Length: 223
Image (cartoon, rainbow, N blue to C red; front, side, top):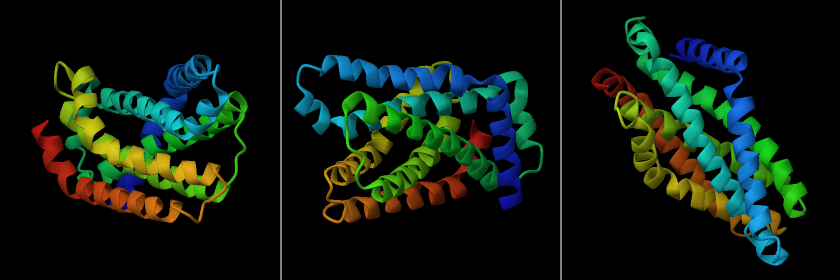
């Protein structure tokens, strides 16, 4: 399973490195979202600073939808998904590999967006350790849930609209917990409410990964 996961993750990351979709499309879109928020709330810097964590994770969520849609679109083109199912790879390994590839892209994007928040919103990046743990746990949950629900929507003719409808309710708790933990870290009180929210993020990450390992194979066959 782990060998297959490494193979699939390497394949997806090489495709992205060559196509540069994440670099040329997803990253500029995410930064533009932060800029629009900064322009809209520039008149009240206090509100902008208080909402910085939430705005960051909204941008990450929108980027997750684009990254998942791209990852599943690669498999639906020219029968690639059918070839992947017939390759003999472990479905759990396929799931872990695709989720890992999405997670790597999201982590790189979060670093870029974090710098953007510091520059555009004039935020003091306190609690970097807590922010890193929050980003890691939340990214695992988002990537796992996105990969799992992406395979459900990939063969639908309305997959562009179906994926957000399926995914947003599922990842809403992850976004809430990530926002609360980030707020505590940025407020300089990472040992206050942050541990509880980090624990919740860990629970969701384990749950989504575990469910994906078990259910991805049957879902891929149904799709």
